[in-house]
Length: 171
Image (cartoon, rainbow, N blue to C red; front, top):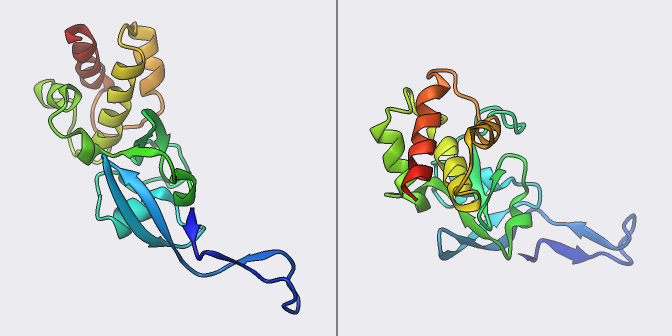
């Protein structure tokens, strides 16, 4: 899990059990590749993806799980990477927007002009991709429900909904 991040401190004055050290080595599976990162036990998955692995598609915005700009897939399910500790992602498959390059969902967002400034786009694409994999027969209400976990301040949601719907219709 987090190699050398904890150590036994039995017998050390003032401590019992284990104590977290500053940093340790994490082994993560990201976009189909084994990756390593040096992280603190308190580092979020978002911080490790961006700062340690250079995967900047997941965006830091609200940092409290409200906006969805940091959405990534964990074993195919969308999660807010700002709310998840990186150590919790060990032994799971992480997929970022970088791992979805050229997918039908990404192409649909371009085709439907489903973005303006682009800050939130990666989270919407990741979430839409997961929806298309988990619920390929999703109706309009299900699409709307899934898209509620992401916020956009620039576009109307109609274009985003059309992009997701077009992928579902193609599959």
